[in-house]
Image (cartoon, rainbow, N blue to C red; front, side):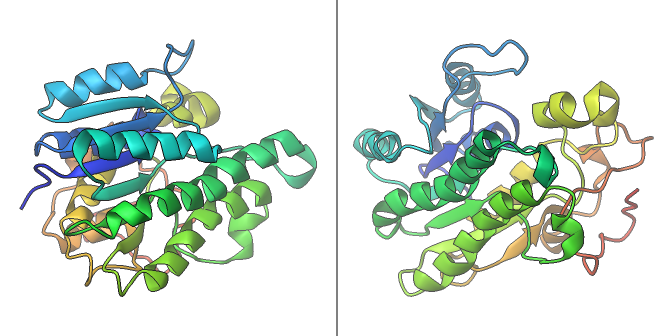
Length: 285
């Protein structure tokens, strides 16, 4: 079982989790559409669509780097059209692009509010919508959102209500679309990490260099996504998956290789339900 010859349309794939998912698929020989905004190097953040393309091709895949703004319908439509023209179709849509601002209500300016809602919720809806006519023609089509289980508790909203609403919007898209397109055989699922993941967002926006020691690597999300894409789309849909729980069910027993620093305690991520129990041997916090 592999993704050889499959075409993945991944938003925000120039770095971080999106790039890791792309590279995992590339090792199978997949085609990757890198739909992201970063064409020129960022002063702080690593990676562009072109450097990502080089990594993907070195890993064994085929890459199509495209400058895409998921907030703009014409931008997404043009990218999807180019992807289909280049690779003949789309098998998997990954809604990875996301904006974050962990600010309270009075500290959240409306420009930042709009950015989060336009990228997270609207971007997921728009990208999925435009990919769907092509996904419906695919043999085992999947839509994946990098978004949390729908655990609607005040504790997840009070500290940063604007961000939480925007992030849960992505999950609501998967909840509704899973049922809407069940008869078409298009799987719509969400994937979320139990722990913080070592990305540029964590390093620069939240915890700094020291905080990375308490994270897992992006590979745990890539491996979980890869295993999800191999599931029969007509049987595996409407699922809200926590990375390590899912991988444990797929046979993984040693999660230490995913730790940035095996000696450091693992930092829990937001939005993980209290009744979600880590796999045996995994200690959080």
